[in-house]
Amino acid sequence: MLGFYFEGLRMHQFPYMIGVSIHSAVASLRIKIDLANEVAALIAIGLVSVTVLLAFLYGDTNLDRVKVTGPYEVGHREFRSGTLGSEVSVFYPVDRNHYK
Image (cartoon, rainbow, N blue to C red):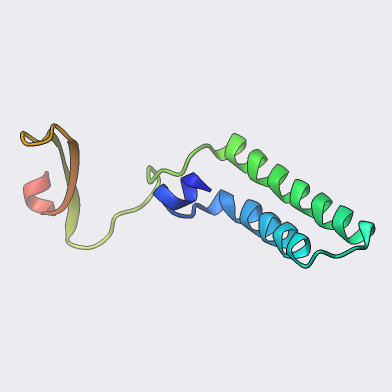
């Protein structure tokens, strides 16, 4: 949940979020039927397993295979700010002719 809060939702987290939502919904209803709780837990465990498998197979999300189209390329600079010492990454559009 912290990764979702700080980094946003990534595609391989969708099964996890669905499983947690189903399990939370059933748990919040306080259903007395043990079978419903067990089924919800099994669904959540299955979807979390899918999330772990996708993260293992494909790793973290990156943009290595994105095809950039249009008249611009992506410029990138990294530097450390003088005031607080924070590391900063800046991405900006660069004309294709100037980029080459």
